[in-house]
Amino acid sequence: MENFDIIANLPIIFFSAFFIVVFILFIIAEVFLLRAKKHPELIPKGKKILTVAFSGFFSAALFVAVFYFVSFLLQGGEVFRPDQVKGEMPPVPDNSFPSGPNFYKIGNYYFNGPFSLQTANRINSSAIYAVLCKIEGEYEIVFIDQAEKTSLLKEKKYGCWVENCDGTSKDLYVAILWTPKNNFSANEKKAIFEALESEISPICSFEE
Image (cartoon, rainbow, N blue to C red; front, top):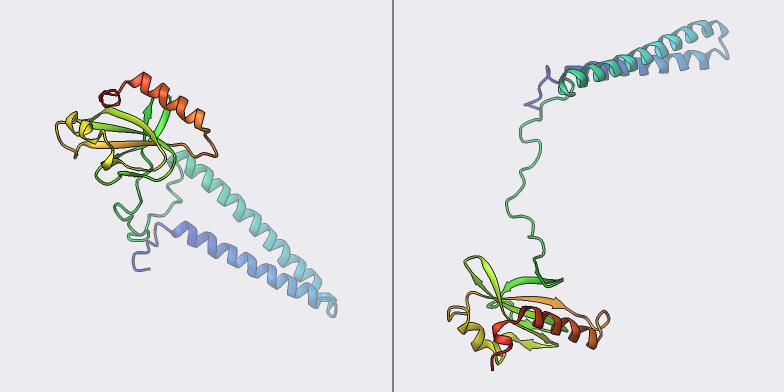
C-alpha cells in the first residue's frame, strides 16, 4: 500500500464510494418498506428513497459506461487503468522452465533428438536410430539402424562413427524414432528402416 497512487486510482475510488452509497440507500429503503407493514405512513418515504437509489444506480452505470467508452476512444483505456505497483508481480526466474522436446526430421519422420552420444547411448525398447556427426552446427548422418535393446557405445560400427567424425566422439549425436510394438509391426518397422537407409545412404551403414 505504500506505493498506492491515489491520483491514478481516483476513478476507482470515486465509483466504489458512489456504489456503496447507492447500496446503503437500497438497504434503508428496504427497512422502511418492511416497517411499513406496521407503520403505513413510512411507505411514501421508503418508495422515495428506493427511487433515488435506483436513479443513482443507473446514473452511475451510465457514467461508467460513458467513461470507459471515451477512455478507450482517446487512449485505449489507459485513463482508467492504474499504474502497476512496483513489485506487485513476482519476477519470472531465469531458466525455470524445461526446454521443449527436440525433433530432427529424417525423410518423412521426426526423430527425437539429436542427443549427445556421450550421455544418451542406450536404447531399451524398439526403435530406429540414426547416428549423426555435428560439424559447424550442421548434422550429417553417418549411420542408421534398428534395435530392440542396445548400448550404442558397444556397437561394432562405433569405430566407423568416430573415424568419420574427425576422429572424436564428442561431436557424435543420436536421433531416435521410437517404434513401440503396439503401434508398429515388425514389417512396418523394417520397411521404414530400409526406406530411410536407401534414401540417406549413411557412410557407416554400408562400410564393412
